[in-house]
Length: 330
Ligand code: NAD
Image (tube, rainbow, N blue to C red; front, side, top):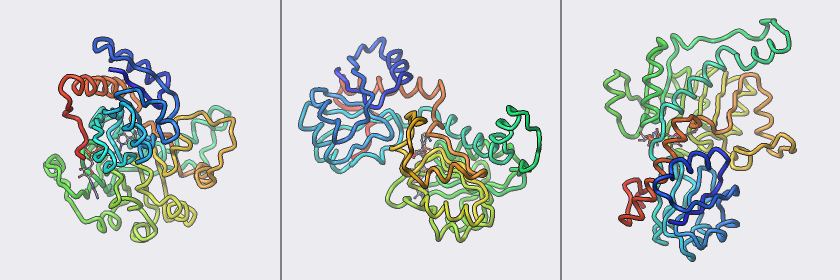
C-alpha cells in the first residue's frame, strides 16, 4: 500500500524500514507535520500515518478524504488530536498503537521524580564545572510519602507497581477500576481525596473534555503545600498558568513534565538557534525545581520497535481485510 508518513525523523524511518521489510509497503516520508496546510500533499495516498502532535482537525480530514485516503495509521496511543466525529462522517478508519511500552513511560515518571528529589540535574552540571558545593542540593525522599495516581490503565498500573519498592502509601483515582490495582491493595479514592492526601501526584489519564485542565487553580488550592506534580500524559491536563503561579507561591514544590499544552510549537525540533516565543514555557525552564523533557517518555528502543511493528501490521491487516483490531471506535 502507498503510505504518506508525516512527522518523521531519522529514527522513525530507521525503525519503520526495519518493520516494513516483509510487508514491503511503499512508504513516502515527510518531515512536515500533518495539518490542514500539508494534507493536500497526501491526497494520492490511500494511507496516511501521523504522530502525536499532528493536527487532524475537520479541515485536514476533509482534505484527505476528498483524495484517496481511507486509512489513518497513528503511530501513538492517544488520539486527542483527531476530530473523531469528522473522521466517522468522512468514513476514515483510524488505527493506532494501543500499547508500545507502558514500562517506558512509567519508568520515565520515576526518572523525573528522582531527578527532582535528588537534584541530580543540578549536580551533573556543577561537577562538570568543578563545583562540588552541596549548597542548594538538599534532597527529598519518596519513602513515607503518599503518591496519588490518576488514571490506572496500562501506564498508571505499572507506575503503581514501581512505587511499591519505595515504601510509600499509594492511592488511586480512575473512572474505571483496574483489578491489578485492587490486587496490590491500593484503594480507589475520590479525586478530591487525591488532591488533599497526596504529596506526589502523577497523571496517567487521557486528555478529553472531562479531563482538560483537571489540575487548575481550584484543585491546586486543595493540595498540600510543597506538592510534587508529575505529568507524562498530555499537557492539556494541566492549566499551565495556574501551575506557574503555584510554583511562584511555592505551593508546588516540584514539577516534572514530559508534556506541555503548547508543545506542538516546540517539541521534537532543534530550536537552540531560535528565539523561542513562548514566555510561559521559557519562564518554567528557569525554576530549579522544575524538570521538563520534550515528550521523550516513550522514547526507548523497545517502544520504537513496537510502534513501527504495530503500525505496519495495522496497515497490512487493513489491506487484507478492510478492518483492523486496533481501530479507534468512532
Ligand atoms: P490507558 O487507556 O491504558 O489508561 C488510561 C486510564 O485513564 C484508563 O484506566 C481510563 O479509565 C482512565 N481515565 C479515563 N478518563 C478518566 C478520568 N476522567 N479520570 C481519571 N481517569 C480516567 O492509557 P495508557 O496507555 O495508560 O496511557 C495513559 C496516557 O499516557 C495516554 O492517554 C497518553 O496521553 C499518555 N502517553 C504519554 C506518552 C509519552 O511519551 N509521554 C506515551 C504514551 C502515552
